[in-house]
Length: 224
Image 1 (cartoon, rainbow, N blue to C red):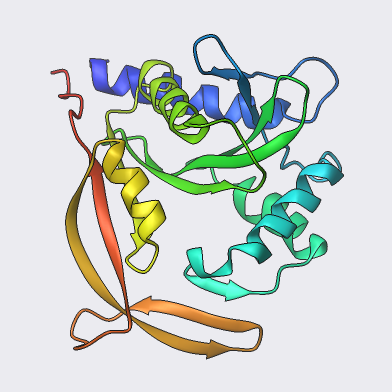
Image 2: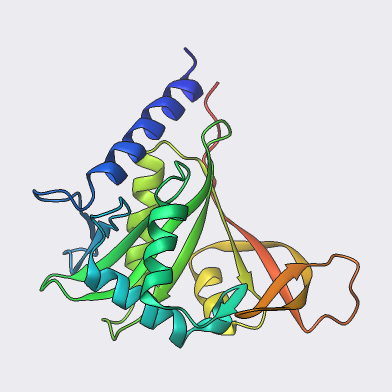
């Protein structure tokens, strides 16, 4: 088995096991953030019957407060959020979501990985949102902790993300973290039964909103 295949196999099995254990009795895996640590990244439980009501409530409220950060703008409900966790995030073995708690157990943010390709060892940082006040530079430390874990434990090598061009605060944060813009794609809005959906439309001129594809600099070279 090649080095890349072995990394892929190990990381894949580990991610599935971590998600399966989230919400079960006993201490969960926690990733420390900061030096000294001031926060912990805790896997969100996504198995039916195990979801954490406090997490569901926070995810719902924070998403509603920051609708324009997402490609699908709608008014979330706790029932819909729980369904998203159990039916979308949970079964997807290329995705994991973390709540970020301070050392007193208060959740103040969430962050995750998505679109993990276990063949190419690439991933996308996803669902990055601070919902409550936090120490200065807290989200930078949280991001660094997640990327270090993704690379060092899951064996992932290439990290990317997408962000709306009309979110300058997020873009400034990502650039400061070392992300480099790769391309911009125009977005076209579609009215839906529950809100608005932005879809990519490369040929669209004078688009109201664009999506920016970014990659993290200093990517790991693949071992042969």
